Length: 552
Image 1 (cartoon, one colour):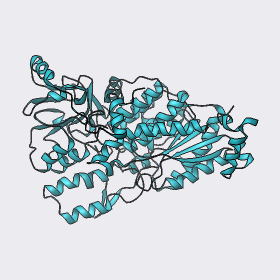
Image 2 (cartoon, one colour):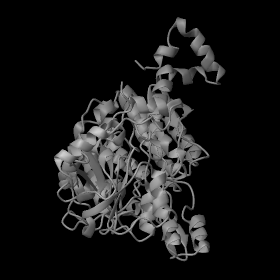
Image 3 (tube, rainbow, N blue to C red):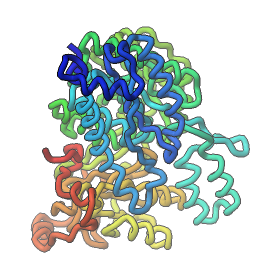
Image 4 (cartoon, rainbow, N blue to C red):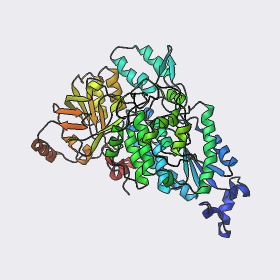
């Protein structure tokens, strides 16, 4: 029995069928499986402006396989445009709205299966959360990476050549005219930003976990291959519906461990911790932060992609994509089913590695450990996260003097005014899931630090989070957050802070008695936003250490 029979089968459904006929459907279309295409097409987001064409490709695949396709809209936000102002409060909370929206539409219309047509940062995990929650057959189809930009025969990327370039301009290294040239050429067209930032990281995770067809993560946004992937995914979803293959049959604990291992080998975004934990939560699978760290310790970093390295997503695509990475990692992966009908080992065995530098052998990695490290200590009893592969060796152990700020804006003003010096440890607090609210990304401050030439001279810690484009000793997701009375709220200007990434320690160098005394003086603060969805979000959201999911 199809789910859709709830709205179309039986005499009593004459009204429902009449409304379906009103949309132009035929009797034969009504009798087929109903496949929803949850599309995040929008003119607002460069990663999504081309999804209209992919909608058509998916539709053709669905009809070719004997299904009926329905496109419905899902909102999308570009983090790069939302960055550095009120808009960034909205980015992470949108994830929950997306999950709820997909769930509501798919439930109300009794859809049999879903194509999750997505691309950017929070949209992909939000859609995967919905499919997991409903346990309805689903396939992720991402819009693909953007091509690198070009200027003066040099490849350009968004983060390095715009956000970080601002700092280089401020430091007098490039002129205003050069900055404008970069601005106009860094992003040449549609697609997710060119490095292994959060959008492309989550695309890789979706393929590695088995929820996207092979090649789905890295095929370029501008390629015909992307359209073929969309068509094949449309065909496959009808098959999954007929065979009742649901996310719970794909996304097992072993599948999550596989996805995390691929992510660590690539050096993906720290936002993986938030999003993968949230998806697992919907399936009733617990993924404590220790699991991420354990897998990272046991997984060499074999692909050096922006921001930690010199390669672009297009290089990973031409080197063989995620199947080639899985081929390298096969001995460390578990075999399991994927939406393609092939198992992980079958995909790995059929893959070809086309570039030995883009995807290195395990015995010749870029780093012995994977991309993410989880640190704990008296500042972060429940954990903090760092992209360790984007940290220079000489600052993986860092001791500095605290300069504490209660908002991103205050910190940014200090950075741009030249008030941050070598040896400082910038503390940005009250930017967590509750305190922000919304756990803003700190790309503007971290990029400015890099552009000013301070990436290996200062550290930054926050209960907010970071863009996948962040580099340097920048530790986020500090839990408990300041708004929940976490110890980060007790840090004072001039305090000594010690960061030891190899030993996974983050410490405020004061006595237990002094810290306890300070903690007693911390008072609850009035929320920064007291109306609308963000106010409700602040009341219901949980800690970053548990994925910043909503209570209930």
